[in-house]
Amino acid sequence: MTVTAPAVSAPDRRAGLIWALVAALAFSTLGIWGKLATASGLSSFAALTFRFGLVALMLLPFTSRGLSWAARGRMLGVGVVYALATTCFFGALDRVSAGTTGLLLYLAPAFVVLFGWLLGRTPGRHQLGAVALAAAGLGLVVGLPAPTDRDPLGLLLGAGAGALYAAYLMASERWLADTPALGNTAHVALCAALYFGALAVLGEGLQVPTGAQWLPVLGLALIPTLIAVPALYGAVRHLGAAQASLLGTLEPLFTVALAFLVLHEPLRPAALLGGALILGGAALSQRR
Image 1 (tube, rainbow, N blue to C red):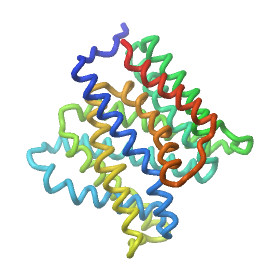
Image 2 (cartoon, rainbow, N blue to C red):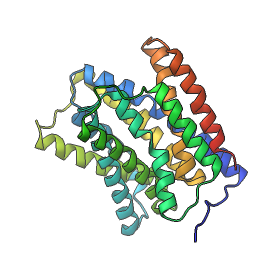
Image 3 (cartoon, one colour):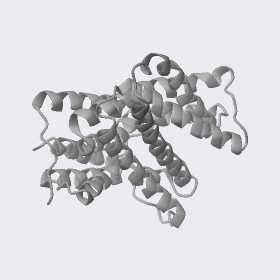
Image 4 (cartoon, rainbow, N blue to C red):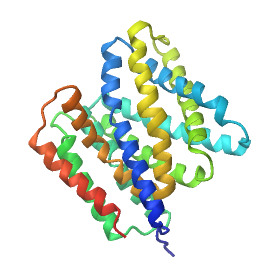
């Protein structure tokens, strides 16, 4: 027997929409901070290690009180899924274009719908339509796969990033619904910092930021982590993983707008059309 997604009250829907928009806007700065970190000579694993390590240091002393070991275990388990999704994403970037990698990552809403259907949750027609509109819009904003994007492992890793990110959202909805968002963020950040720190040490060694390199690290820690991650948990808690993931497709649209305003990158007509489709998908996802 199949079940439908639980109904969401109007106040919860409004709160979830606000949290989702805050998360998408904050996450959209990730690429800009990442470019600044790379330009400063900092390696990806070093930037990720200190990004999450700083957040864990800031939050753990204030958010760990009163948490059971079972709750901590669930938080760290979700953190492992997030770290694996990030690993797949960067692995795909090394083998296929950034546009293709981003497109595969933002197929997460389709994976959420698929996983929900496998678990017995029937998707509604509005939800399916929203996924289709978002996917078409992302193809225009992020870019369709280039003819050279034929590396099987790169494509598999990109799809794995989308699937694992969907699993991360669904695990957050199921296992972290009754735990505080800042506590979840602290433990996921701790897990990610240890994971990426270990990868750095096993590779070329952990590079410690110096001087001006701390600016992009602080930017990565504060905006797309300390603000974005708790906001994402708020969106998942109020809306569920499916609607939160669909609203998350606004992130590349915000990224294009920020790149235009901050980096003075040109706006492509295809990106404007794709943005309209993404907005249409986001609006349709809120229909009952």
